[in-house]
Image (cartoon, rainbow, N blue to C red; front, side):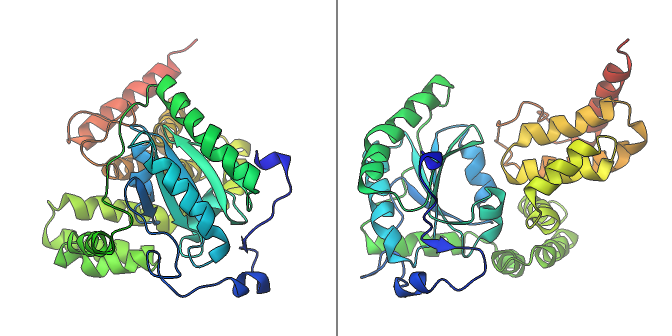
Length: 338
């Protein structure tokens, strides 16, 4: 649909001041009078800190991604119609809204130049639907045809789970409780690191989580969040096209392969990231096993313990031994070919 019409952005990310956007900017928070529709029901708000977990859930149920700016009133009706359509399907699909002004690295990962943009996400794979403000006819087509077709496509791909219900989106009390609950779930010793991550200081967050781990080496959550922070500190602002071009043009360069594996991880393509690095070693780059091993050990830490979104994940937490054996096996397999 996006390729059939010129891109008419509501908000530009090009750096110039968008005077038209300023006319439509509101100060009210979502859910408040005069503000954007609140999240709730099967509608969630996603940030850079929760993006990876959201992508992983697309292996269980399909997700509609709305990249928007929640202070631009031109996008409110679109967000409202999408939310209503998704909530009527009772968990067959989830709407994830991403504020690209506050989370620019996500917009960059999707190569989006402005808001709004609409994508589908099934099994970690993004599919573009629309970029720019939709016409009334296009919006009706999305609600009546595109969303039901996404649910059907997900079911054909074996993605048949139900999205979690997060309360009445029209309830102010529910929205306040949800926000407070999210804050309360952060352990006190994690607060500094958590705030640094929320502010986009991923290197600082990684260092703060490292201090938490020094005090408690068994803090699995701190280890997981530190690995995420290290990943984002390295590659959140990378130019995706340049990184992929560099990897394609330098197949024997371990740093180029590590960089593109980072991009895969940030985009939720976990299996691709693992396969890329393991295949790199298997192709005969045994001298580069150590940096690959370290990076994969970091990647192993990122998914939740119950996550099954990629088949290479070992069943045991003894990652180092399993990974060493796995890499050696893949290397022998690759070099054993005639």
